[in-house]
Image (cartoon, rainbow, N blue to C red; front, side, top):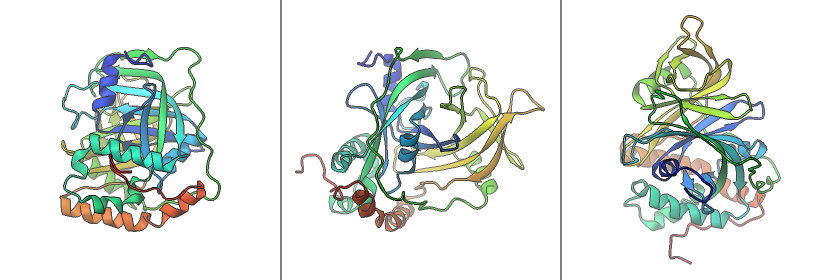
Length: 334
C-alpha cells in the first residue's frame, strides 16, 4: 500500500500504463475523453496527467469542474497483456503557476516513460520544441476506484474508496484574458471516421456521466457502426448505463510508443430497445484530435505541421500567466 492507501495491484497499473483515458466535463456537463500519459504524483497521493500549454482545453475544463475520471484499460506496451483495468474517479487540481518547473518535470518524466518517442532526436532539435514541452499538469486525487481483471469486465469489480472527507487542493488561479480557440479542425465526416477507427484501432472506450455528476469511463467489449452512430456492448460486470450524454474514444499505438492515433465522437447514449444487452450511441459530431500515425517520416511531417500552428501560442499563453516562456532543459542541465 502506498501513502494514500491504494491497493498495490492498482498502483502497479498506474506505474506501467503507457496511456489512460482522461475524462473531463464541459460547462454543459457533457464528458470529453482523450487518451494521455499518466504519471504517479510526487506526493504519492495523486495520479497526474499533463497537457500542452498551447492546447490547454482539458486542463481548463478540469479547473472549472474538478470532477474527472481516468480509465486504465490499455495493456499495449505495458509489459503484460494481463494488466488489470482500473477506473478512477477523483478531483482535479490544475497546476500552471510555475511553467518552468512543469516543463522540467515533463521533459524528465516523458523521457523516462516513453523513451522511443524521442529516440535518435538531437537535443538541439528538442530544445526548439517548447510549444510541445511547455506543460500544464493536472493532479488527480482519487475518490473511488473500481478494477477488473481485463477489458472484458467479466464479473463485478473490486472496489476502493477514499476515506470520508478526502479533498483535493485548489487549482492555481485561472489566467486572465481570452482562452485560445481550437487549433485543429474535426473530421467533417464522422461516419467514415468512426467506421474506420472501429475497424482499425484496438481500443474503444465509452464515457457517460454517473448519478453523482462524475464522468464514468468504461472499456467497450463490442462495437459496430450504424447509420446514426454506434451500437456497442460493455462487459457483464460494467455498471449499468442509462440514457444521457456520452462520448466514444477510439485509439491505438504501437508496443514501442512512438506515436498514436486517437479519435473521439460525442452524442447521446441509451439502452438499445431491440436488445437489452446493447447500447446505442447517437453521434452528433467528431472532435479535433492529436494523432501522429504512420512511419517515422509521416509522423515527423505531422509533428512539424502541428508545431507551426502551435508555436505562435507559447508566448501568448505564458504572458497570460505572467511568466516567461519556459526553456526546454534536460536532466543535469542548469
